Structure formats: structure tokens, C-alpha cells
Length: 242
Length: 108
Image 1 (spheres, rainbow over the protein chains, first blue to last red):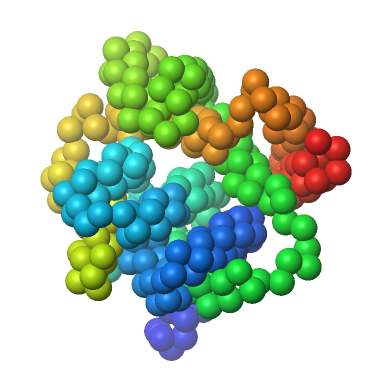
Image 2: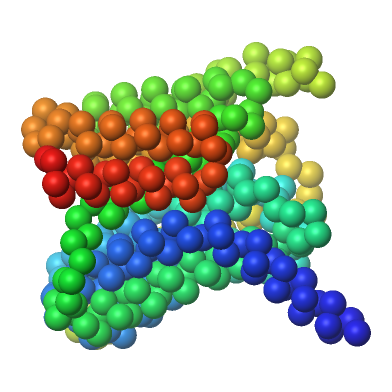
């Protein structure tokens, strides 16, 4: 009886999570196929993209790793570069400290698989009251990683032999569209837009100043600085609202 | 690179990624009260982070050359318009993406 209840709640979580991951399926399949194909073009067996997608599961970093694996061996530089490219995860973690509380054994995988897309969905999704949030978030992570691993493995196996029956040019925009919708959802939910506007302004300014390859860290520092300076005002307002 | 060097390189990427994901949870474990400042950041950061992700996903758009970001701008307006109108995530995303694909394949 207990077992049955448990199974059905996992099914409910999966059912609630799946629709949220459909755009990610499109985006991840496109990106991970490309990643698998580029690994194959660089002369690596499909086992590389497959295992890297299982263990790293951070899209942009895996693309960078294609180049790293072809360059000179430098583990320290590799570690530092990874820390810099993925530093944005620190912000995700700080935002998720509360939401991951009480998720038990699932917590490890929730943190392990916290990519941009899983974080965005898990932070903003309206989880139905009858669904356990931990199970919902676990399903979102797992589905996303399944899409990513299967795409990169197939890309690695097929390599450049992939039949280009459909013109997929422009499909990568699905990720931009998804982040925009998630940004809008957050905007519609929050009472004050100071943080959203700071984020838009500061990261655009940093993009112009530092260029597309180096703007994430300066943006994060600027956002952290601005939000810290605004703390007095934002927190006081928050209390006044309640 | 030898196989051993390749494995070490991949392990370093895994280690670096996991440090960035696990560090906040190791520094502020669930059992202990989280500092007020970190709680504050957890509340206000997401707004800014989602903005950063939008900018990040548009980072390779060049306003000075090529199509000057016009297909991106049109498609983004459609995404926002659709979403404010129907507020259905999949519809807004699919509409904007199809619009963008048509623009870059047929118009620009």
C-alpha cells in the first residue's frame, strides 16, 4: 500500500515536470547533438561526450572542454577556467538553499544536476500542491540530463554523418526564448523590479565593456555589489510590505 | 594528450563544476541558520540572475554587422507579446523560435 502511494506520487511528479522540460528537450537535443558531432570531428569516440555529459552536465563548459582536450595538458589552468566559466552556479546555489531543504537523498542529485535550465525551471515553476517539490525538481533534472546525454551520445556516434533533412538554422533561439519567458515570469511574480533591472543594465554594460567571452564574472561582481549597496533599502521595503 | 592526461583534464572540469554547484550548500548547511545577508541575497538574486541569463544567451549577437540583431529583436518582442497575452510558456517559446527560424532562413 505504502509502496503504491510512493510510485504514484513519482508518476505525478514526472507528469507535472515533463511539460516544463519540452522546450529544453528541443534546445538540448540540438546543442548536445552539435556537441557530440564536434567531439567526433575532433577524433574522440562517442564514449567521451557520453561520459562527459553524465559527469560534467554543464553545456557551455563541455564545448570548451573539446578545445581543452586538444590543447596542451594543463590541469590547474583547466580547473581555474572551469571555476570562472561556471561561477554563476554559486548564485543558483544561494537562491536554492531554502528550496532544496528537506529533500533528503534527492538533494545530492538536485545540486549535482543544477544547470542553467534546471535551476530556472525549478526556481520559477508552479509545482502543483499534490506533488512533492523534491520529486518534481528531481524529475526536471533527470529529464534534462537524459536529453543532454542521449543527444551528445548519438551526435558522437553519428558524427558528421547526421542526415540534414531539416534545416535547423536558428533553432538555438529556443534557449533565448526560454530564458526570456522565465525572466518575464519572475518579473510578473515579484513586487519590485530593482534586482531584475540591475541585472539587465549591469550585465548589458559588462557585455559591451568586456566582450562576450569575459563578461560573466564582472557582471556577477557588479550585481553582487549593487545588491549589497541596495540592501538597506530593499530589505526595509520588504519588511514594510509585510 | 595521453589517455591519462585526458582523464585528469575531464576530472578537473568535473571538479571545478561541482565546486561551483556544491559550495553554497557546504558553506551554509541546512542544519545551521543561514546568515541574514545570504538569505537576503537568495531572495533578491534570482531577478538579476535571470536577466543575466537572457543577456548571456544573446551575447554573440552583433549589432554592428550581419543582420544587426533585427531577427533577435523581432522574435524577442513576439515572445514577450505572446507571453503577456496568453501566458503559456510553451506557446511563447515555440512562437518566438519558429519566428526566428523563419527570419534567419528566409528573410535575413
